[in-house]
Length: 205
Ligand SMILES: N[C@@H](CCC(=O)N[C@@H](CS)C(=O)NCC(=O)O)C(=O)O
Image (cartoon, rainbow, N blue to C red):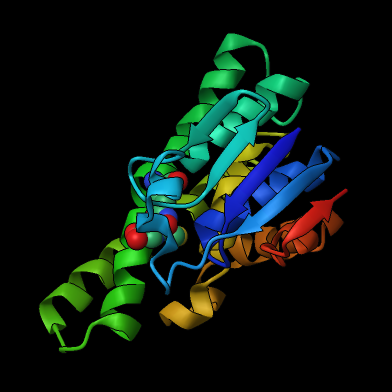
């Protein structure tokens, strides 16, 4: 029995995409972040860090989106190579998303759209860092079809929902043609399209 606690955000979409890719029947519970549901005792019992996503897999509760993706890949033996060197490559690109792409693009979104007071220095810093990260991915895709190499993996699933926000972030995607093509390739996958619609409360197949 799998239950995903999530919200309509890039981090919230990753696990939903993986569940659909792996055709794992699951239940979705929408967490109302604007209402502060993530700070309530019932949610803190699932994730002491008060953030979505959280996956409950029978008696195991997993927070942090990267840990959830690895759990699902290991559970099914798919979307993450088993061979140690190839697995390490996939995990490197996965952790680049969790440690850099998510936090930097998240801050850029905040200083562009969320901050009540303009902060040009912060905006410039996160814009520069975001462009740098788009460049890192563009160069990776010069030599690899997918982030982990020849095969689609949880590294692509983690990065897609974030890198797809380029319009909102004011990133000139035409400057990153390989990344643009990769976004189109990933974005046409039915499981990605379904996962990007999450959360829809209720049972999902
Ligand atoms: N490192 C975490 C980040 C999760 C995260 O930032 N979630 C955001 C939504 S995208 C959240 O729940 N924010 C609510 C809050 O901070 O109160 C992960 O990858 O799971």
